[in-house]
Amino acid sequence: MADQMSSMMDYEYHDYEDEYTPLDGSGDRRKTFKKKKLSSSSKKTSRLPPPSETTYRGKNYGPNSYKERGCCACLCRCFSCWTLIIILAMLWTTWLTLWLTTTYLLGPSTPSSSTPGAGGGDGDGSDGGGLGGTDGVAYMVKVPYEIASKTGAFCLDGSPPAYYIRMGEHSGTDAWILHLPDGQWCYNATNCYQRSLTPLGSSSNIPEVIPTPGLLSSDPQVNPDFYNWNMVQFHYCDGASFSSNSPYELSISDDSVIYQRGSAVLESIINILLNKTSFGEAKRIIFSGTGSGGIGVFYQADRVKSLLPPTATYHALADSAFYTDSVNRSAYVHIRIQFQRLFNLHHMLESLDSDCTQTKVLAEPGSGWKCMFPEYATKYIQTPLFIANSKYDPWSIWNILSMRCYPQDCPELSPLMERFGADVSSKIQAAGMPDADGFFVTSCYTGDLIGQGWDQVSLEGTDVMVRDAFSTWYLRRTSEEGGEQKRSGDRERAVNSTVSTPANVVASEEGLNVTVTVPPTLPKDYRFIDCASSMMCNSQCNWSRDLFKLVADRLQAMDDFYIPVNH
Image 1 (tube, helix red, strand yellow):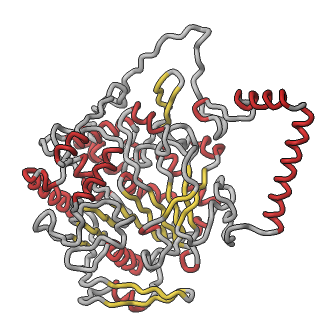
Image 2 (cartoon, rainbow, N blue to C red):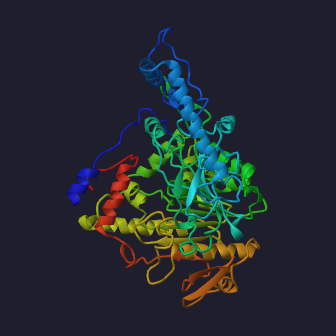
Image 3 (cartoon, rainbow, N blue to C red):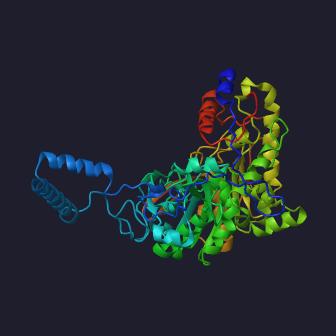
């Protein structure tokens, strides 16, 4: 199996000819693209952002396309043109009659909502944004192109930003979760162009509806503390954790460009929410993210806070994103070099914390890229922060440690993996977080802790799950700040004291009874660390070969940038 997985995984992605050169203190440098000289008759004008969503990349899907003209000509050969016009008019009249009857006489076919903007699926952001309700899904809304173009807030392909929204209800109507999803990065210009042809670089062909698991769930049994909150998931389409910040179009060929505007995309969506929904009246806001979205939380937490209503309590939750500045299994500073390339390619200097970058650059010219690593950047974050992370995060094991074999198939590498896990744990503890911040560090081979792992991953020998650790930390912080009322006195006492045995608490809200299990032995500082005796010390973790292969297949299918020989 090891040989099979090794042969399947041993490849290397090389396409560095069109990258930025590493920043060395002398400013931004970009290798010049060589273009063929065009004659005056064939010279092309530079492509500007498309005027509508139907003409991205120069394609025209309008009614005058060749195929439609061909169909009409063919029909006209079979029938007289007047006959054809009459038939089409009758069909259109029939359809319009049925539509009017269904819409205005029979009523909508789906449950309506009293929330503004709750009547449409693919909104344009001008009516309050998306559908309401608590049906466990969120609905897509696109930022109008005219608004996006004012600030140049484009996805990689030039399409406007988008987001998914589910409106809250009852006590959650003034509470919001803003979530940045995972989606990896693109590592050079060609790689970013390839991504721009997919939903990870465009909003032109994305799902109308997405599920909302974990922290975003509307199920009170899964998510008892936040199930009825407003939920917004930003569509990830810049390839740089919503932190690319180039004012220029990056040419890929004579007629293709990409836009690196993740920072503007993030701001444009927040502005739409402030202007078109009740978000401006929010009293509680959680800014969360997973994976590449989670590291975006490290980068953008304070900046997002500056855009929000000053009356709202604001907290950040970074999941599976504490990527460390560590050497790989060959003692090579591989991830550091990749982060330097990303930093320059995506013009990230202005998107990172200015206190951090200025400090690093003063100490060592050209070292602003260090603020991409949470271990250096965390102490500069002013926002109350909670970190959820695994010592053996699959992406980190795969791409930082460069270990790509099932541990039992390469036992000689297991000590390296255990040392890596201990290094991650120690760096989180030493990251300079204020005493009031918290974290949950598991020893399971898992990512997406606030998604699928929200009510599944727990610490060895306890019932403490990710949701319990974060919820108790969050409720304590908001209690101290006077920003949130508790659901019950029992829940409040559990948050503000250490309990030694599990206790079931029933919270009643709007006639809905929710049973909440308070985990045992909650530490007073709300910093949860799993066992450390061995790599597989938590008996509740899944270290099966099937899981490892499933994760390996998923990671291999993603954008990759380096794989060493063997394993």
